Length: 262
Image (cartoon, rainbow, N blue to C red):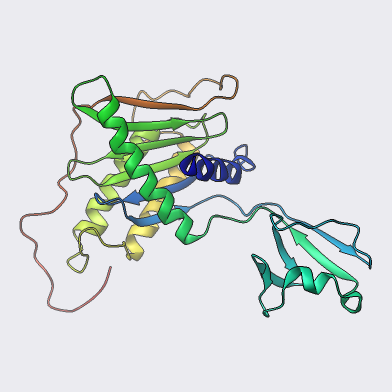
């Protein structure tokens, strides 16, 4: 139930921009289930702001999510200056007030937990699949987005959350793997399984997403995906494909004497 709730929240967060953005997010998960890199490429969500006088013509409950009151950010039940939201709104001296509403984005901790749960779901899928030697969960499909996953031979997972009609995601996953090999693994200052902090990796990843959205594919023979059926949720698992993959860690590496980062 917890995984379904977080997936539903993530799907709602992306669905508003599904018509305008082709690729929403990229996640890199290590073999232990830790999120070591993420990139969100979707535009900020639309927000609504309303100014009211006392008494407030809105009934706020604890589950409502105001983003700001009079320009002061709100985090849960408290404002950024430490004042309690419901207590502030109950004081007539604070009126008129301007309240901004919107769906909050997932926090960093929620994204870490989501990556860990997907790692567990991936392992469960490989065990439950009737195919011998199953590669695990390759795709989670809904009516508003698709989560595509590619796992390397060393257990690193690359996941792309995209518009269901976006073509060439398999080629994009391979391209992201190549970027990871070239700009993370070949960096002598990068430690395996640790968060990726490399400017060149970020730049090339953003460029790859831009090319994928414009061209639709990195490889020949890819065709646009058909229109979606009525709303549904599905999981796809298949036998581990025989694909050629780049070398993950070079056996020898010449390191320049001058110290430097990515």
